[in-house]
Image (tube, rainbow, N blue to C red; front, side, top):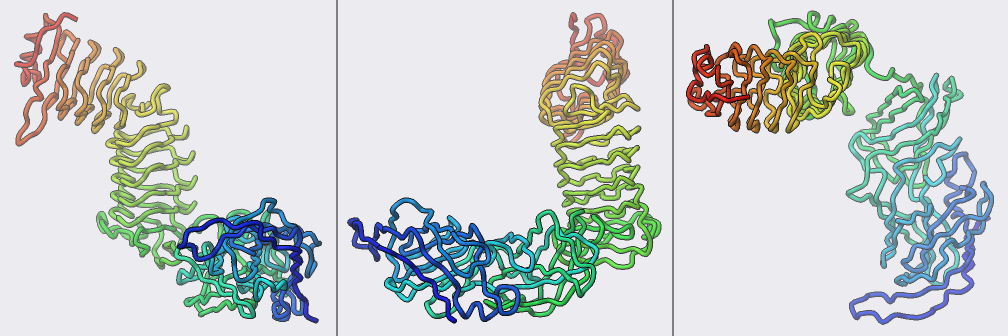
Length: 610
């Protein structure tokens, strides 16, 4: 028996017409619309088993809403029947009289979306859902896009037709599924912006827009427990626009613990409108969150394989010496690289990924205990590193010149950070050193010109830029600040502590400081003045080298501090003095002018009464 949509349009009243410019192709109408319309499904749709079980009709759900278009204005109607009804009343939600261009037919679209639009030619602009919701033995509410159209304005019978087809997955195993992603292997667009053309008596057609997306996520809420065996497999439904997956498709299952399972088919698969494409039962075995102990995961900017030692291999070390295991395979697919070993990986050894310039992220397995010297040296595209809690050591220069690294989390397991470990990480803006760290080598953050925040027990209480090394009791980091007051607890300004701080204009050195080590302020080209307290007894080589804006140095010690070469010089086709005035105690002028290394600046030394 045929079931018809009875469109009870009691009146469509022409209330008035506006005066339109001659170029307007269609007149605009102010329309009085019915308070209630009635809806069912086309008989052919039911016969093609588009619900879920053979012989069943599509059904409405309580709260379902549709868009109704007697003109080009989108009007909202809500279902008044009960869930499971094949037909029933829809009540108008739109309250105002509406103005729109007249159409040749009446249209309806399910589900209602405020963004759904109708052109004068009857082309529907619609957002196909990129996120669908699990329903037992069915597709989720709102996932199944449908349209209806009459033969003309006087035709009051509308029958809803499905716009998409259905992919039915059947999964089993020991897992509780949180979400499933469906994605074509050839980048097919299956969600988002689309246009739908409805033809009376024919099938609706869907065209995906250029801005459409390539994946659909099935959200399983708090989780769906799978059947334990193939005979008891759990069904999951995707509503998909008519699509041919030329190289097959991939589904990625995520369980409630964040572990994943991925299954791909390379066979050409076509999803036809109004038909079900069932897949064979698949056992789900979710991988742990992160690589197995014999794997390293990575991504690359080129989407290609990254080979260890591709840039440099110190002393021709073998994989066994470097990683504690031999490499079995190195593959890259579905956006991720996997290096597989014949045994658990125990270290990321010396120079392991040095100069792998396309490497963008690395996930290290829990079996690794150390990241050794130069392990990621000059990996200039590296933006993310996942260091597990098993690692205790970050070696010397391990991340030197990782210029794209903006932040890094150092786990509580780390006890030692080597010299220059993050040297030249010019994009690094913040870092936290955990309390577990007991030693830090010299200059671990030298030339980190973007570093603005530093946290942890090695950071001074009022310091957001520099690190106080408790072992060496010296500063050992570059800084992006414009001015800085060194805490009174500091006794030594470490080698290259402020080196490369080109924005630094002012530094206050406390009386607690006794030494300014080599290159401490090298290249601070905005620094204009400095006062050296009378507690200082030594100034290292190049301490103020290349400080080209430095005009005044106030050096208070009555006994000249032990000096070093190029203290106040710069290089320009040979070393030259900066030319700043060096003010020293009046009674000590001759002592300074004749002291080793100070004598190089004798003509600039001036007596001053402090």
